[in-house]
Image (cartoon, rainbow over all chains, first blue to last red; front, side, top):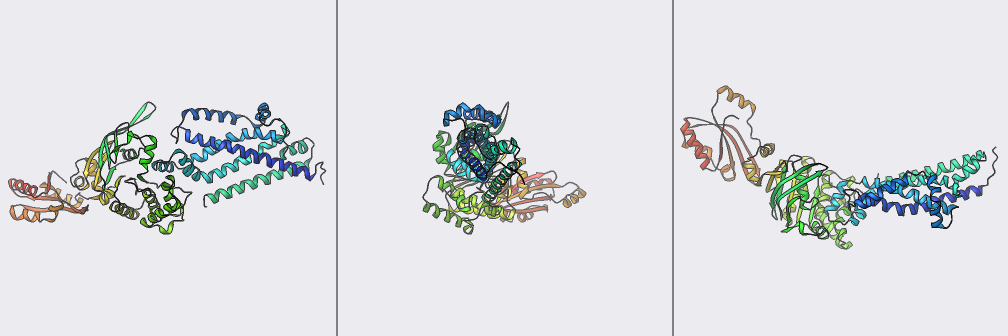
Amino acid sequence: MMDTTITADQIIKALQETLTMVGVSLLFGSLLGVPLGILLVVGRPGGVIESKLVYSILNPVINIVRSLPFIILLVAIIPFTRFVVQTSIGTTAAIVPLVIYIAPYIARLVENSLLEVNPGILEAAESMGATPFQVIWHFLLPEAFASLILTFTTATITLIGATAMAGTVGGGGIGDLAITYGYQRFDTFVMIVTVLILLVLVQGIQSIGNRMGRKARRE
Amino acid sequence: MIELVDVYKTYKRGESSIEALRGVSLRAEKGDIFGVIGYSGAGKSTLIRLVNYLEKPTKGQVIVEGQPLDQYSVHELRNVKKKIGMIFQHFNLLESKTVYDNIAIPLVLVKKSKSEIRQRVTELLDFVGLSDKAGSYPKELSGGQKQRVGIARALAGNPTILLCDEATSALDPQTTQSILALLKRISETYPITILMITHEMAVIQQICNKVAVMEDGIIIEQGNVLDVFGSPRHETTRNFVRTVIRNTVPSSVIQTLKAEGQRRLFKLEFIGQSASEPVINGLIRNYNVQVNILFANMTEIQATTLGNMIIQLQGEDRVIDQAARFLQDQGVYIEEVDSV
């Protein structure tokens, strides 16, 4: 029906690359982004450990990184990428900019989730003489848990979108397959298959996230 | 014991500043259920938050169990707070934790062992009557049950002070009754000082032994509930008292009076002893006056009867004056009024 030049192995390899990029950058992005998000909440004016210095530096820095489109960030930080992973091409090289891209995004989402926590809970925590760490660990995070699940769902889906541009630095992945074969070689079959894979991936992650969120909310 | 000494609290918002408290002093002893009543914006919320230093005073001293709070370091203050329980209008329970875990939180914060926590939480669940709800989540509870969890949580660390921030304002009248009964039981069971703020006079009437009435950041009247209720001096206090004690004459009686023309009217207040003595009978027998009772009402506060009466006296002016003096001598508070 439709002529194609790629094999099933290529699709599987691309899928693996996408999942690797998403998984690894989500992990490191979270390790960076979650603490930053918490800092944004507790450090803000009126926060648990109010710090004008931390907040006034962190807030604009996150905004600056967030204002760069991923494709620009990807190429702009190539020297940094080379410094960190000793290479500027391939899947590994794509992960560095992905982490730099997603960490501030996660930080903002975590910030929003934590700000949703009823301020009365924090007042209760303070009235019990909880330390700032205890406020975060025993009150803020458990209360925001359901919302945080949705935060990570959104971050994961955003990452899948960003990995499509990883081809620019030879990162591979489903998105790269779609561009190099589907678009540049007019391979309609590849285009349809890759779009379907991305669709199923995003839908799947979103519905798993929603279900987990509902469960955490005990609905 | 809680003592506030000439406390001021000013909030600065940019150029303007709001004086929430303007020189407030009060003293609540162990065993007291001290009620602070006022309309919203009177400064009650600020006042109660000073006691556990959720708010720091701009000026003046907050003294808890004999120790001024401003002498403590941040670290020491956390330990002081652990001996001050607080319950809230909207309960402020963790939605993500079970009833059991909510009550356990203060104990988890001080790193008690699992078995100690289990013992204390079981005890508290029993005390507040929620033993069967240990595994439930706050979402599954009624308002009254949530407040019981709040109370159990506040008591977990064996506090010497319990602060109640409009604890019954979000509850229906019947649930309010049961929560008030619980608070009273706490006061009788534990050596504790209870400070509560409210805008409901019925709350004060039912469980408080002392009361302070607040308006515009100052306490306009305070003392034993009976004294303040018995002879409210300030208009705002009178308004609050009127919500629980009717002392207005029905309009039909006023109509009749108007038709008959003006007579000499007196407002009488009987407190405790004088309420059970036949003073009106004495009045009629000893003086040549006609007594017309226009209005009478009795209320019980703190196991003491408080009577209110409006009477009309007819007779010679001189005799009426003597009669009024007689009532005063009998311990009745009497006030001549022009009209009712």
